[in-house]
Amino acid sequence: MLKLPPPTEAERQRVRELQERFARSFAATRDDRNAPRTVVIVPSLSLDQEVLARISGVHHYEERQLCMLLLLRFPRTRVIYLSSTPIAEPIIDYYLHLLPGIPAQHARRRLTLISCDDASPTPLAEKLLQRPRVLRRIREAIPDPKTAHMTCFTVTELERALGLALDLPVYGCDPELYYHGTKSGSRRLFRQAGMDMPAGVEDLKNADDVCRALVELKQQHPRLNRAVIKLNDGFSGEGNAVFDFRGAPDGEVTASWVGEWLPRLAFEASGMTWELYSEKLVAMGGIVEEFIEGDEKRSPSAQLRIDPTGAIEAISTHDQLLGGGNAQIFLGCRFPADATYRLEIQDRGLAVAKALAERGALGRFSVDFLSVPDGSGGWRHFAIEINLRKGGTTHPFLMLQSLTDGTYCSKTGQFLTPGGEPRYYIASDNLESELYRGLLPFDLIDIAAMNRLHWHGTNQEGVAFHLMGALSEFGKLGVVCIGPTHERADAYYRETVAILESEGQSWLKAARP
Image 1 (cartoon, rainbow, N blue to C red):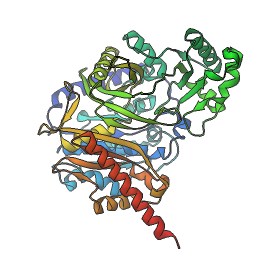
Image 2: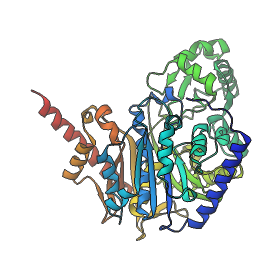
Image 3: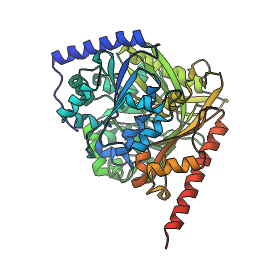
Image 4: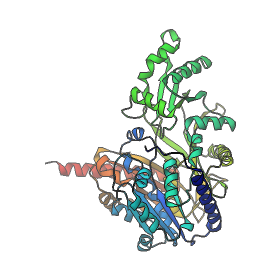
C-alpha cells in the first residue's frame, strides 16, 4: 500500500476548514430530505492487502457499499460511486428498482458511476490518487462542492489525501485516530472506560514479544488452556490465531517451549503461514489475550455513529455469526441482538462512543463483544475490539433502513417501520457454493423473479441480495432476509438457500452430457 508523507500544516488546516464547513452544512440539512447534496462514495479496502487476499472474492467487496445507492430515495441527492472496475448494469438496475417511492429513471439521472478499470490488488483510494484525469471527472460531476462530502469504508492517509485532492470533507475518522481502532488501541480505551475485557497484553511488536506475553499470561492465569493472538489491523477475524497451552511437557509453559510451538498456531485465515504471520506482527503489531471458554458463547456488536456536529447516536445491535476453526471469522449477523442483553450491549457501546467523541472521532463504527452466561441467568460481556470504520453489520442495517424508511428505537433496541411494526433480519456476506459458480447477476435476478425471492414493498419484508459480482467466479454472494419476526427472517434465509441449491443442481444436471 502506498506510503504517503505526513500532511503539511497547510494541508492540516485545509482539512480542518473542510470538516468545519461540513459540520455547518450537515446541521442545516440533516432533517431536510429534499436538500441538495452530493455524496461521493469511496468503498476503498485500504487494509493489509496480503491478509485481504485470504478472503474469497474480496475484490468484489467494494460492492458492499452499493446499499448507499438507496440514498437516491432523497429526490435532490446526487451519488457518485467510485470503483476499481466497472459494476455490471444489472446490479445497478437491481438496486435502483429497490428504491421506495422514486422512479428508477429519476434516480439514474442523479447517479454517476466512475471506475478506474484496474483490478489489481491495490486500494481504490490509491488508484484514484494516481489518476488525475479521473479526479477531474469526479470534480466535474459535483454541481456544488459546498454541499458535497466523501463517505468511505475506512479512512486512512490515502482517503484523507483523496479528500484533499477533491477538496471535499470526509464523513469518517481522521487517520490520526486510527490507533483507537486497532486491537491494542481498543484494549487501552476499554481499560480507560472501565470495561470488562479478556486478560491480555497489547502493543506487541514481534514474535519475541508474543512469546513473552503468552508465558506471562499463563503464569498469571494458570488454569488458562488457550490464548488468542491478534494482528492489530486484522479484520473479520482473519488476523487471529489460537495458541494451545495444553501440549506443554509436564504442564510447564516455558519461553523455549512457546517459541517452538508458535509456528504451529491454529490460524483463522485460510492458507496463512507462520512466516507471513510473523512478518505481519512486525509490520502492524498485535495483542495476546485469553481465549474465553464456554459451552455457550455469543458475539454481540453495537453499532454507533458520531455525526459532524458531535452528536452520538446508537444505531443498532447485532448478534454476529462466526465460523472458522475456532469461531473467529465473521460470516454474517442477526438483528437485533438477543433481547436479554441488547440494551446492555448498547449502553457499553455508548460509553465507548463518548470516549471516542472526546477524542474527535466521526462517523459510523462498531464495538464487538464476547458474551458468556454469568451463572445467575444473565450474561457477562467482554469488550473485544473497536472497528473505526464501516463493517459487516453496516450494509445490512442500511438496507433495512432504506427499504422500509423506518427508525431504530434506542429505548427498546428494536427497529420499527413507519407503521410501528418491528422488523428483524439475518444477513450474510458468505453465502458460498460451488453450485453457484457461473451464475451471472442477471441469472440470480431471474431466479429471484421466478421464485418470488425478492423484496416485497407492500408488506415490507423479503430478500435483498448484494455482492452479486462475486457469483460467477467465486460462487459467492451476500443476502439480507427481513421479516416481522426472527423466525420469519430465518425462514426467508432457509428458502433462499434451498432455492439457490435447487437451481444450482438443475443447471449442473443440464450441463452433463
